Image 1 (tube, one colour):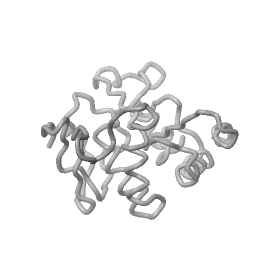
Image 2 (cartoon, helix red, strand yellow):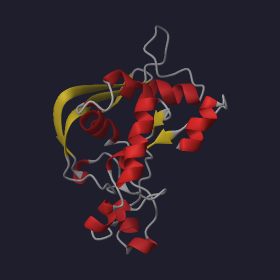
Image 3 (spheres, helix red, strand yellow):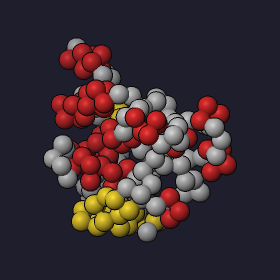
Length: 187
């Protein structure tokens, strides 16, 4: 992260993304779950000091994007011993709620900064005409209720995958509708 910070100061064209799981979990989650394959990801979860450094990078602008890192795997692929399981967890169905509850609600990020990290930032990094509500823009939109309580329940995911370390987490703030090119697609 420090290398990215220095490169940006030097004017180099670099970007940085983080994931909700790396912002919210540490390597303790692996041990605490008895090496659940739902905690196996790449890069692996790190120490609390590293997690705090990522949070600092969000706040100081070093980080440009929060990415879901959506890596769904069929339950059979993850139902093996830790060393044999593929890397990755499901991210699309939990990212927004995790960020609203664990980053915006306690004041780590403002809602506008979160929107930038999840929407306008990725569009800018990828040079896409997206991430805006300007007239004439493509209507790719997620509507959310910041007060809606969501208990993460892997059995209710739309994805065929169930691999999440957040099963059972109670979160406040949840999507209520998703539109792709103006057409409602989820919820």
